[in-house]
Image 1 (cartoon, rainbow, N blue to C red):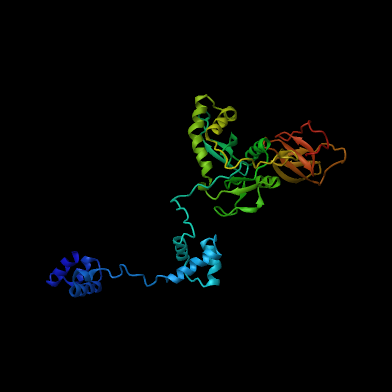
Image 2 (image 1 turned 45 degrees about the vertical axis):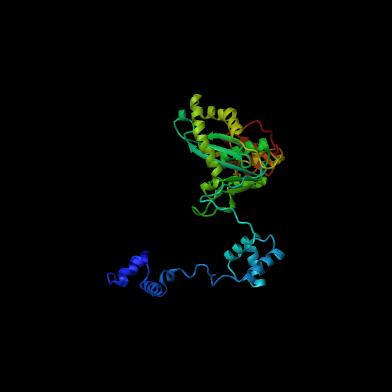
Length: 384
């Protein structure tokens, strides 16, 4: 009807061809073609002649039958991409991936994939406890009475969200990370992998925002490698969604409970975490694992403290002392050797700040955090 109105005005010369085409939103050539068809056939001449007609690019029925028969008889179970890559060159399939996929789906030989959401989809949990653990820290005003933010460091299971270790510290660093690992492995055993952020205590990152260096290990990376635990770097905050959700829940609960109970120190807050809060969280938020059983393996071997610690090599000086971070560690007399001058030894710094000097598997001496020799270690006692 709109065409007929415009056509009438144009025929009466009240509109130019250019203006008539502009009103209808078509080119002048299209308007002239429509006008000619209308004058010859009437309103029927304006019908779209493509409707109901097969596309000139439509595949022949024989080609579709050959493709579906080939897939059904020889390549059943192949993905569309695999089928096209493998069978395409061998059987002369020159069609696109989309066409092949659509054809196989219409023949019900390939299932349609679930529609992807607009945002990231939640990653399926590991089926067994102990297969993968999450580790992360969050700086927040966890203790309102303390008046300053501190770090909450949490380790929990991917399969169930059960929290195995949680404590507050002034700062998340290498020592606090090692402390949490000692707590988990001592209680539950060795686990398969640790999923963590790309903090400097986990990874060396040569270029900001670039890939991590998997060859140059940090102290945490070295310790996990010794224990056979795989360290997995998270690529983005979104990839650590379970950690972010846990911290979001705890930020709404823990500070309020600490304030309600009048807790205003790190020591008291950590005691509350151990004795009350973590158990309550696990009771409320832990979900059953998909599969029964456990991937945890009991730890058997040398003292965990001598693996999950900072280890650095030093050369003993002429005074039979080792210099380590401004402290002078005197090696006491040993029964089997007069001195260790010029020998390469290993200094172990434990998460609680204490130190030890080892030569091979033998622990030569232990020291407090200030470098003072502890008398509790008998000479020549082995570290294992």
